[in-house]
Length: 330
Ligand code: NAP
View 1: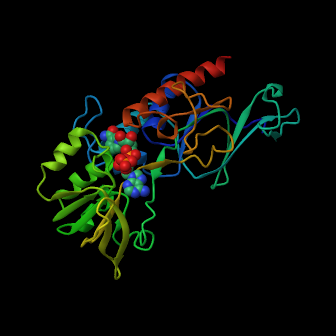
View 2: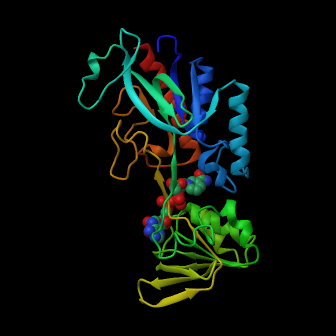
View 3: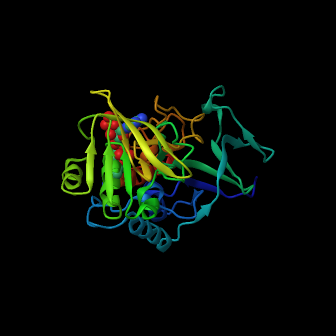
């Protein structure tokens, strides 16, 4: 291990938080790399049809914004590595030159001369780093509707911008009542014959501007107070059975597609044993990104926070780099 490079920081995840961190880390002249399992950087932004609230860039698509982030990183010479991380191990280099693993839960970290992390990947590579910026974001939640798993990819989708084109001139349902559900419905209304938005309450969680925009579209129907019970069909989806929670009446929506947009869950598997998380699995970290584990910082949707937006994710990435610099100079 003696001759192995020890990075100042390794950024994990190439969404807005990770790429913003890379831009700031490059400008701070830190030694670092960014590891993401996907060949296409951008994270959830990639599946956003139109990002209309990123300052200065109205109307840009998610793909265009991701591209712009990546080009900015490339211009600064950021080192992107595509690999699936299998393990993150805290430890230190022992006098014999070997990496000695430590158990942060039982071993006092104060006794460690220089705390390091070894990041191993499915490619068989190992990276040593003094700090980590965790920016692995979040992924789509499953609704647990009967038939949801069975028809995944055969009419059930979690990404309207990715799969919407398969439902051209057909009827579809979007399940959910947040920003994503409304954005998806508006996007799908341009392709599909009819779009039902099935929401379990009688008011949307989504931003008022999205609700107003969807309400003005003729081929979108709001279906309130309704829970989705069963997705059925033959080889592909043909029906969504819903139940009204106030009247208890059933209704069958004759749809070819069901888009599930009921929120996200954090991608924290790699960090759960290392840092404190809340009951929903989000890493507990303040605006500085500092977690319960020295040297590990959290940025973006992975962090417990009140507002998960591209702009707050990017801000987190920048803040984490400042925190890393502070940590390294201590
Ligand atoms: P969200 O805001 O958490 O909304 C999830 C929606 O799904 C809620 O309406 C919720 O109902 C409903 N829901 C949850 N579990 C359900 C279940 N099991 N069955 C049926 N319905 C269920 O999630 P999101 O819309 O995916 O948005 C995630 C985050 O990204 C939000 O913070 C959002 O503001 C942000 N976002 C930002 C942008 C942007 O910056 N342009 C774009 C899209 C999203 P209840 O309302 O009854 O809880």
